[in-house]
Every structure is written in C-alpha cells, then in structure tokens.
Length: 402
Image (cartoon, rainbow, N blue to C red):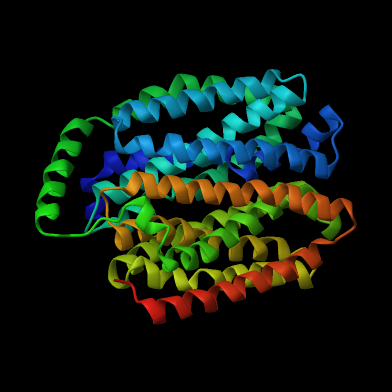
C-alpha cells in the first residue's frame, strides 16, 4: 500500500494506459462482431481474416515503432499512441466498406493492444527495479477494470444508440478526457528519466549485462518463454473474438457472456496482485511456469461442458491465466535480459503476441466455417498448454535463468 501511494501518479499512468488499451483488445472488438458482420455482410471466416490482416500489419509496424520508446520522450510517444486510438474510433464509426473497416481495425490494434500495452509494461519494467513485480501488477489492473466495466456498457450503448454511434461516443470521450489526464499523470517524467539514466551508467560500470536484441533471439530460453506466453494470446483471443458463436454453440446469451466478464475481471485482479508479490520474491520466470495451468482448465471447461455455470468458470480460469501472463510476462524480460534494450525486446515480444492474436481469429473462423466445434478446438488448446509447461521446465533445468 505504501509503495502504491508513494508512486501513485506514475502507477496511475500505467493503469490508465492498460484500461484504455481495452479499445484495441479482442474481447472489446468482439462485442461488435455480430453488428459488423451484418453491416458488411461478412462470414465468420471473412471477418476473422480481415481482423487477422489488420492485426498482422500492426504487429509488423510495432517492431519498428515500439523500439522508438528507447529514444523518444515517454510523454510524446504516449501522445502519438493516444491520438492514433482516438482516430481509430472515429474511422470505425464512419467506415463504409471493407477497406476503411480494415484501416480502423489496424489502428485500433496498433494503438490499443499494441502500443498502449507496450508503453506501460516497458515503463513499469524500466523505471522500477526492486519493486518491478508490484509496479507491473498495479498498472496491469487497468485490464480487468476495463473488462469489468466496458462489456456491459458496450452492450447497453449498442442497444440504445447503435454500434457506430457507440464508437463515435468513445472517440469523443477519449479525446476530451484521456489526453489531458495522461499528461497530468506524467508530470515529473523528465526528472524520472534523468534519474534512470544516471543509475544506468552506474550499472554499466558494475558490469551488469544487458542483452541486445540479436543476442536475445539466439537464446533458446527466449523461445521456451514464448511458447508459454503465446498460448493464451492465441487461444483466448480466438475464444473472445468468436464469443458470439461460442454463446450460440453453448446456448448462452451474449448478455450472460458480458456479465461473466465480471468474474474474469475479479479473477484477473486477484491474480495480478498475488503474482506481483510472487515475482518480487521468486522471480518472473518461475512464476510464469504456473501460468499455463489455468489455461488448461479454461480449455477443459469449453471442451467438456455446456452448462450455464460454465461461462463464469471459464472467465475465472481465463482471468487467472491472463493475470499471470500480464505480470510475469512483462517482468520477465528486464529480469532475464536487462533494461538498456528493453524497448526493443518488448517491441519484438509484443509484436509476436499480436501476431499470435492476429492469426487466431482467422484460424478459429475458418475452422468454425468448416463445422469444427469449439469443443474440438479447445482440446487442441489443452494439448498446446500442457506441452508448453514441459518445454519451459526442460529448458530452465538445462540452461538455468542466469
């Protein structure tokens, strides 16, 4: 509590970006899926492919844009990301064809899921050392906060004013409130960065190693970590993007799915807080080993039950997984590879995560169009999750963490 109070403004900056990244997250865009498919006469597979194309391009762009956070003032880098998000809301609101739809999806994915997540996780990892796990866990609470508040709000707004007008309202809201709030939260950033630079020089003289991006991609541990981290990005993105079809297949209502997101949010919050403390005690890598277990449970729930109570249970298990991957995944890279090139490393990792989430809607959509059920897809997801645990354990035992 004392840590959060003493760093409340900068932690608030991270939490705010995590919250507003919701506008580019799959679960949020998926809430408009049925309306968009009907408006543009798209099948599940066609919409999924369009989403995949937009997301894949955003992932490639992020590799280049994301590394600039190592060179550009955090305030200006964040400003550009916020303006892109606001513009994306307006573009989607006024889109009149597949090209403008893809442009809006691209901007939403790059600014929301991509840059805003990249900015806060890099900033928390870079400007906190001793309490890095706590800082990331506090900032990441913005994700479940958005997941708890926004789905029901979206469903309500769509029913009252329509889906286009909902995006227009969000664009106006973000423009009027988000930009000034972000700059207020970043007050004192110049002094904070000067302190970091001074400490970095001291660490260099102390021979503390910071890995370059070329060294990282030659490290076998990097790929073992990715195997675990990319599993929820791919599997849960597919589930959340096609949540309307999951609801139809399980005979659940969309309002019940939206309500169940509250359980997801609560589960995520508790997990983020707990895993943040755990990271500071045993390290992010060891905490990450636990993460695929609730993902296995989530996939098992989809595969083996259609009961109404399964929806909140699915969300609880998913929240446990996401809570751990947000905290341990973000804290892992500076812990293993140092802080000097953190922006470049995180840009690559975030791009790969976005790439996994890009492929997922198209793959799920094409399988759905071919008659493959969510039960069958979930069994494949269980296999991936179980294998990732054993691979990660094997590599850590063989190579160590230092």
